[in-house]
Image (cartoon, rainbow, N blue to C red):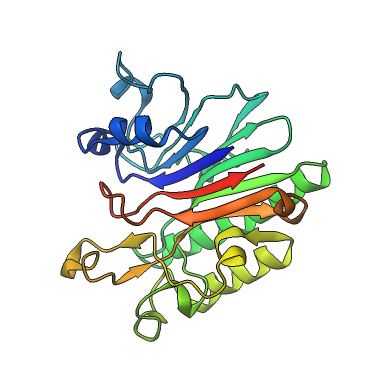
Length: 253
């Protein structure tokens, strides 16, 4: 089973940049999309969702902002939107799809770059999300968690680590939360399979950053430790363009 995750920075924008051709060529079993910036009625038509897929949307109350979308060939057993916490759920940040052998969480984590208030919101979201995942684990769930986490974990995960130590996305408290998340039994699949590989999933639009590969790895697939034995591959498709992020993938037995 192949799962792809991609922050498309606007589903309507990416549809004009060959997204449907990419889906037809790649044909993954599930596509987790973040930052849709749209509601379903602004996008769905005869051409969308792509043939063979069912679309599940969780859009933000605020128009043109945030939002996640899960496209799946396989029918989930159930769908859950959000964590049950209004201040986070109104931003349309989580879809949980239940499959027979695992639950898949498609998550768009908050960005903390616009000031102290949003950084605080981001850290509270992080802590609430860890508690949510821990409750799911205690209920017997095996989890795959994917999306734009908006934090690079280690110096290997961004080009200019020293210059960004005081910037949100590489702050000590953000990185410490990722340490804590991993300590609670969630495996960063790409780094577990590629311990020394330097590869990025996001590049700023400024300064010709993508062409110069001045990037960050801020998009992840995490799995609970009991699923790691089923993971065949974890990868980053940094040659795919259309957004400031690129797709990342997970192959699981």
